[in-house]
Image (cartoon, rainbow, N blue to C red):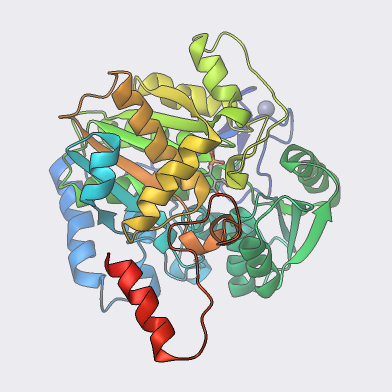
Amino acid sequence: MTANNAMSIACASCGETLSDRTPHATCPKCDGLLDITPASPPARGVELQKLFDARASDYAMRGTAIQSSGVWRFRELVLQTDDASIVTHPEGNTPLLHRNAVSQYVGIDSLRMKHEGHNPTGSFKDRGMTVAVTQARRCGATAIACASTGNTSSSLASYAAHAGIPALVMVPVGRISMGKLAQTVAYGARTLLVRGDFDDCLRLVRESAQSLGVYLGNSLNPFRIEGQKTIIFELLQQCGWNPPDWIALPAGNLGNTSAFGKALREAHELGLIEKIPRLLSVQASGAAPFAHAFAEDFANRHRVRAETIATAIRIGDPASWDRGVAAIRFTNGVVAAVSDEAIMEAKSVIDASGVGCEPASAASVAGVKALVARGVIKPGESVVTMLTGHVLKDPEKILTSDAHSPHPHPSAPIEIDANLAAVERVLKSVAN
Ligand SMILES: Cc1ncc(COP(=O)(O)O)c(C=O)c1O
Ligand SMILES: [Zn+2]
């Protein structure tokens, strides 16, 4: 990062530069991906750590919404703007959890889970959405739209409602969880059930942004990436600016993989960290074009017709491809694919530890287990996995394995008569 007094936005493909209040989320000339270079912060290294640390302790409990946000705490590295334009719940400040059962399951002594499901709408998307909707307000957008597998639409609907900007969302009909659909509708977004898959929805929303002038809220939008960088900044801060060896995350459209790579690059350039952790991006094996490409050293871009139980990452043609490749290369990272069975097994361990997450999130834990088994991650290394969404996001995947199904959930509900003897019988079986 070269020293610069103002944020700059440029197309990664053709070099076109845009104003910081641009209503375009992709390049108006060639539709390429836009890159943001933040303005130089007022300090570097330990001084910058001190600035962020002081805010964390001073404002966490008693600050204004902006001051207590785990995104806007890092505002110098996110978006420089006046307080009045910021649309925040607040968000962030998510916990870093350790559970013996999950550590033992993957075979790592020091496994921690950063639970982004603790964000206001239950997923990490709120980190990017607070910034994208703030930008929508800054550029005077009259409507904001996204394609979604459910979490982006929930987040966009909520932040757009907060900002008073109409929201339009496109989701694949019958292919998103009931929890996410209900949440999106509840927050008041105009919801279109598209007869197609996520990749069709994204194509349609991109066309709408180009032809109908709506502001694009997907992670193609570089302001989303700027917000999602704070997952890493906050994690580094929680680790006392001493990074883990590995950071694992589930990967679909590659927005988050891109944000993590960019955050680590900037943190390193600004002297916030010395060591660069390795990223592990994990896809479901039925939706793994990025993992296939990694196996060929990214010689080709792959597209697949995606199928997986983890609906949040059922994406066959990831939009942030080039940014994702850059993130893996910069961090000497790895991309892995795990089966639906491995995802659901990992989820059951995370759920039974009392932490809980949605299926896509469990892919990161399944991926760590697979890499430990392959000897790529060593048991003594420190690993942080991202739990990207809350357990309540996808209740069907828990309750459809009811007591009558061939593989009932170990704690499937039991119907009883309304008397104490029935309760006692159950209690005995639980205690045994
Ligand atoms: C819970 C969850 N995890 C992971 C992802 C994948 O993130 P990305 O599309 O940025 O790769 C998503 C995307 O919708 C998600 O909702
Ligand atoms: Zn361009």
